Image (cartoon, rainbow, N blue to C red; front, side):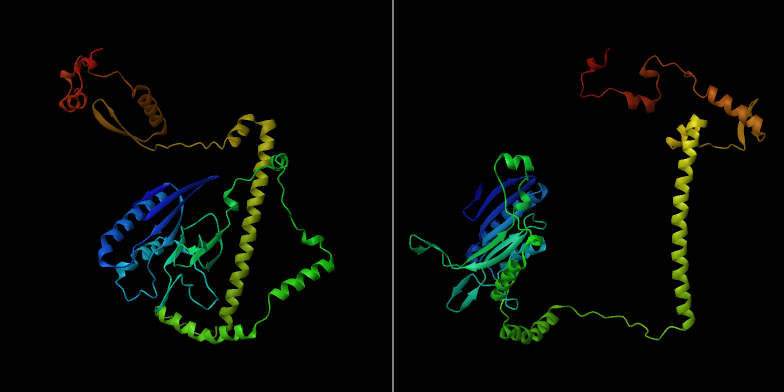
Length: 367
């Protein structure tokens, strides 16, 4: 647990091959006296997020941000930079909606309306998928509510974060779970289940009608948010019959060639497999070469320039070239022409390369 100046609180959880940091946030409300304080919180939060990303931690950020992109849109953009920063990091904003066509549920109510000030964010690729989010009234503490905000709750499925024990280990620990086999249900049981589900999913024409009527408004709002772009025009002139025929023939030939190539590949594999089996009994050397996939490579010399009697001579006869190559490789490694007794006899270039370092005791170089 890592607290920071009463505004941030970080809790690290360690699961099976999974590390999660939960960060609780309280951002002071928008006011000039809180500018430096908000900037310090933003800097510390970014520091924790960068450290979590470098150490492969997943992150959940939750708390009172005192910022609402809708009701606070008239305020300077500096007020919303923490929310914008989380969005730019591709964090998921878990929202509660009363219906599919309504906006996020507010978490704070005042005389002039309501605002969404409390948030729950999860980092990209969070291992526990979110199941649902909803807003509830604050429970009482000692018969009094301990906050004037509503409570935003998000349920996560952490089953994938826990290590799964072997069946023998589960049996040894007397742990079990119930599994419903739908294939083994009787018809009357299934009918009762279907009736119960259908009764809870009542058809509401008024709600559906309201959603359909609001569709045009939602599309208009969507149009105002999307940028205009130009769609290229394509020719709609019907293709001539001859071009259609050529396209069909091209498709036919392509399919035929693909089949032939595939058949050739199969035949080649079968041929070389049979050839290797034959070499196993008749030619062990060929079998080893084919099994190891050894490829012989060589360089063919068609001319060689040599020095004979202090005169450069070009050899083109294959036998002379072969003999010159043999002589070269037999004498290419020779003893050094000059024997050096000390570094003083080195050339200046090699003296600079082998001179002892000045910051090392010279006695280390004496053997």
